[in-house]
Figure: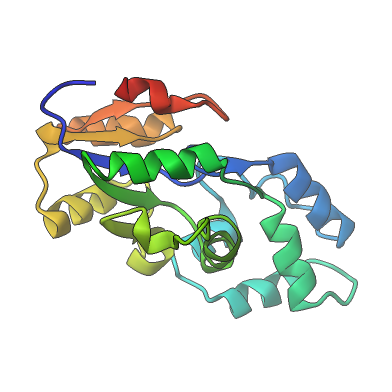
Length: 204
């Protein structure tokens, strides 16, 4: 860790929260959605799922489109449950780490995610001890709210402009090489952890 780093930008999926793509695909197939594999990606969703993460469609519109892809009658609850099978959970040591990092750095979240996943995570993962999601970050930049997704340069520029932070004093932790490359092109330093890595060692 370089001594001039003052700001951290942390990714959500794959960096904070562990993911299980196969479990999600299997859950949708069990509901009769057969073309699911080509749309669900660990780094950037495709088709209908990308529209959801960009906020181009609502959660209700998403569920209606899912229903059109199956011959069985499935409920909103069943669709949400299948989609949330993608999310495993955030290890508590990472939540403790975020709280500790906030004592030394200004910490931001930058995530490609959607309303269904985000609501589930806020209720089931970030609610830890007496803390809630807002306690872990200075500010959260969420794709479905911003109508922008990584790796587009615009989402990084929006964050930099809004926060006023200096890219040269900022470290971005993200598990997708495309996202890191764009951040680096803007002068942001990056670290790309492996799946389920304890990346706290970079601050030692």
